[in-house]
Figure 1 (cartoon, helix red, strand yellow):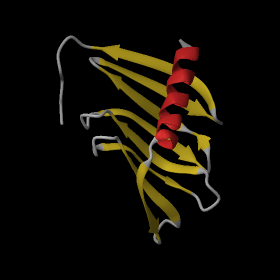
Figure 2 (cartoon, helix red, strand yellow; figure 1 turned 30 degrees about the vertical axis):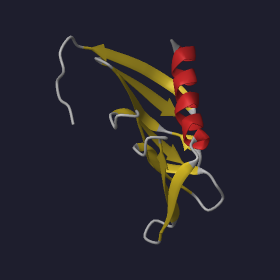
Figure 3 (cartoon, one colour; figure 1 turned 90 degrees about the vertical axis):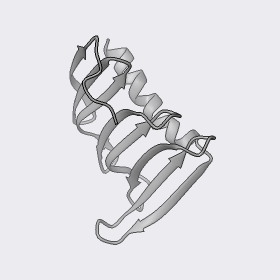
Figure 4 (tube, one colour; figure 1 turned 45 degrees about the horizontal axis):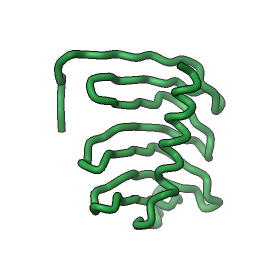
Length: 117
C-alpha cells in the first residue's frame, strides 16, 4: 500500500511537469509564483505555487480532464507535509506526511456519491 501511495504522489507531481500549457503569476503577498497547468483540452490540470528557487510551496490541486478534483497536496519549501488526499471514483485516500515521509495512510470507500462539484 505504501508503494502505491508513493507512486501516486510521484505521478501527481510529475503530471504538472508534463503539461505544456501553463500560466505563471507573481503573488506579491505570499512572495511565490502561482502556476496553473492545463490539459490538452484546455481544462485545468494542476494549480499550485513555487518558491523563487523552484521548490513546490503551499497547497497543490490536481484535476482530471473533466475538471474533477483528484488530488490535494501540501508542500513546505519543497518538502511534502500534512494531509494529502486522493479521490478515485468512490474512494478517498488520506496520506499523512511528516518530514517528507509517509506517516500514515487511511482509506474510505462508499457506494454512493456524498457530494459533487
